[in-house]
Image 1 (tube, rainbow, N blue to C red):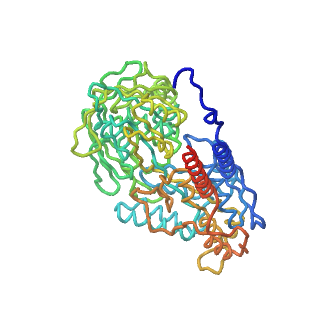
Image 2 (image 1 turned 45 degrees about the vertical axis):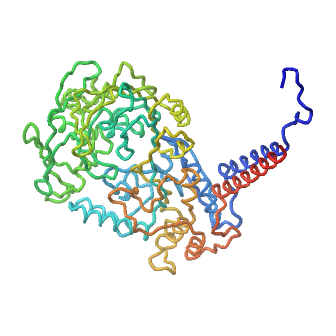
Image 3 (image 1 turned 30 degrees about the vertical axis):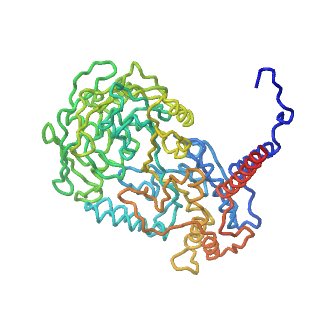
Length: 617
């Protein structure tokens, strides 16, 4: 066609009507989906009773708990329960749910330690007993079992006790509906070799290398961080950063089992109440920010000081967790003996099964922090205050404070005097990567864009399992690993419908009170698969108890509450409610199903328009 050629009139077509209809259809479907997911649903007609669901909109990292609430609201509407969604900021949520127990139902996540420590959840007046769990509910069965487990040294016996606890909680009490064990998501370019999501970045680094041998720097993207004080780090991103420059006394794997690589090289139970700890040799502290302390060696005094810090109410809010340490004796320059007593109310010393697990704590530099003889003096000293902002340890990398910008970028250089003990037995360790340049991202979509643009080599997305799914580049690897946490829908056991006096009102079903029957009905009404598919692309792990999936104490044989409207209605009727509403159906039409149906319509319509357009051409 020449420059002056005219386009035939029949080819000067306007935008095809089919495409206009398609765009209109897209807008309509998107609007419907937004309304279904985010707009509170009207109460069911002839509601049996009303409850509220509390959740928080913002926390330490991205979550979907407000969206969970809206979907569960719809689920409960199917069995005639009116649910009001109350989503607030994180601080308000903590005040309402954790402090004042002002809620009916609440969605929250429990971060677990290497050992279960269920006493903080189920002991009367415990710090995290948000359920209002009281001993008269089970004649102290659960707390007595927890106390027994703490004193049972044999692992198999102890695990069986925890199996009994989980079985009883899920069948005979049901203080919560277990939802998921979240997963952590990592994505990186294939030039990064030997990373393991199971180990995490810090423990993988001694075995990692870059395909380009001339490249010595790894650019990492991570979630927002503000505090890298090892005693006060809360966010997942902060904990990951601390693990790069500090070492724990005892290291544990993701399933809670004890592994090598910690600063305690050997341990031995001399008897059930005496534990001997021997430190690793040739371990050095990194230099402090003022460069006043150089080539300081890690000593047994650092271990003693660290344990005393964790035992001190002046420093540690959870100091009661270390009440089992009765006395610390320095045996020699490399070994201490810990006298154990888990029950001070008895004359004899009682064993404590989690002694090693509870030593999974970061070592603190005694030479730098122990500047006076009193805790008041220590915690108000210049060094103590400075350490909270400029920490250092014995780990693989040391912070380059000159290059680091708080909350924006943290730069870590290889620590040449790192002791070299990795977590994989008999595998050589070598820090091939000289520098970690870690950029902070408040938004995972921005991090994803940076990864795709090669602004970062390695991205840590936290528990946002959906974020990396749009990545289609075959040169980018994606890995997931279970977290050591559990998301639950908690019941307030003082609620007048599914708690309170109704906990002691019998029904026609043996061992099922009126309140328990309602809790079981709600549990069966919650569609966990729908939540997982809709918000996590089914990557989260549906979990059936209070202990995270995949950990050494998790029991898969508990009573399960898979989605069933019919079972939910049956339990409501056992509780004395006439649960016959027009919404009763085994098929929930909440977000997942409606969105899929809408997408199917959109796909078919698009296909028809494209085929028609091809025929016209």
